[in-house]
Image 1: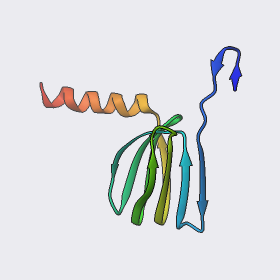
Image 2: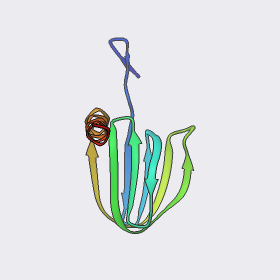
Image 3: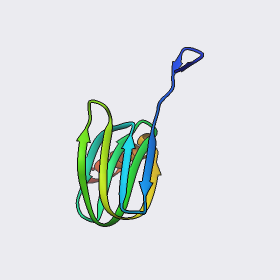
Image 4: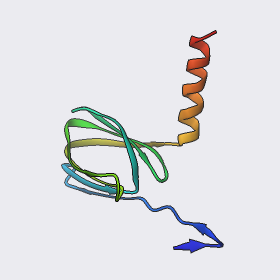
Length: 95
């Protein structure tokens, strides 16, 4: 799907009963543990918080991930914003 020559980015989340989630448009899994999963998606960074979180299936070639556990929150942030914060932190460390 293209609009004026620019490819549209796709990202979809389906959550069932706060226990199971199916996501697409995932570029990379940056970190995960039982309390938090941090993903880079087509539309920005996504932090999933909860309890007893597990990655059931991961297919980065297709950009898909299935998760299970108690999902408490989903929080997005821009990739550029996160990168700038990381640069300023590294800049402060090496001064």
